[in-house]
Amino acid sequence: MHWLFLLLGFAAMVVAFKTTSSGLMALCLIAALVLFVLWIAGLYSARMAGRSRDASMIIDPAELRRLREQAEARKAAAAAEASSGADQR
Image 1: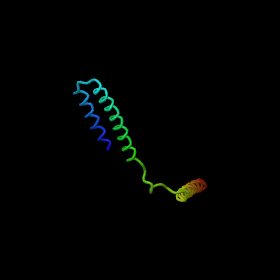
Image 2: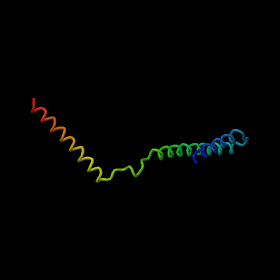
Image 3: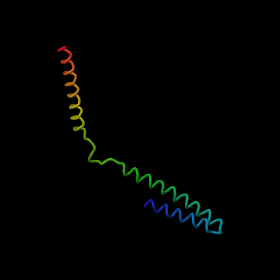
Image 4: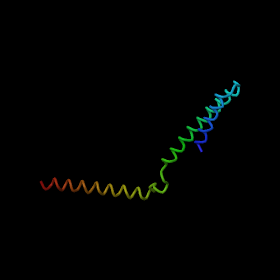
């Protein structure tokens, strides 16, 4: 849809350059400016929508707590292994 704004903006520019009426030229130039801004806003919106995360990939609090507990257990096991290795020397 945002590409339509670009095409209409170019059409407004062509009309502005071809017309002999200064009022119509000013109106077409303003319309072209507005259409180009709308095109940029639509392009930005489309790119940001493509980067949004999938809602199914969001971790719920219970899963996050379980992952933290696993990380703490791994850290405690690594610390215990390091201290037992130092005791044997």
